[in-house]
Length: 279
View 1: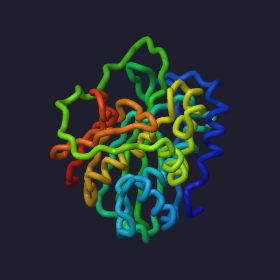
View 2 (view 1 turned 45 degrees about the horizontal axis):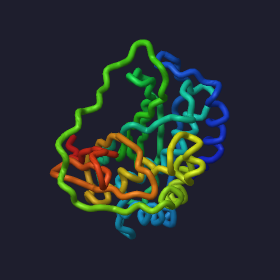
View 3 (view 1 turned 180 degrees about the vertical axis):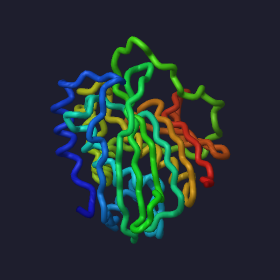
């Protein structure tokens, strides 16, 4: 296998098994590692991703968020298994941290690995920690790695303290973006993530949203495209609130900090920082 597997079978399996699961932070984890050797980037897929996220096209480096898209099907394979204790339906991506050790060439061969090292309590339920690593062929250490958290909401008798940082002062506005109603479908075509909450108002309403919402990883990727993040870099982003489609959002930044917020009102959708990576 030289390319990530299709997401759809895992999404269907995860949806079917979700009603059978009763999440808790003390549940055991089994068979939580997946690997894909000999991975090569497909130029057409990369270009489609760059266009929808507004990264420059044709450059000899991968967008800093692109390896997450490559690893996501492996993460879904792990989280959709019967042995994984959290239900896939309703799982919320709450944060991502990325360490990119150098610019990554789209022409190289890579080995992709995804693992779920732990579950941990959260004041609103249980979080799964998902680690994705990308290694260049012949190199023992990752050239890119990320740590994501996914929250399964449920009642808990021993809530953990909320580790989210308090809201900072509003960052200065840099740009305003008008997001069209088909953004979720266009990003799904490029990324393979066809979660129904992103595709159409009718399917989004079935999960409690008034309209379709933008993919969280699109919001981060779009911010980092605007920021110009590349090279040895550390990115930390936190998903605060969904972005309804269609709608307008403001990208704001100062120094290492960035945020995506509503064009009107005080609602913040994403906060994050971009800092140089040093070893």
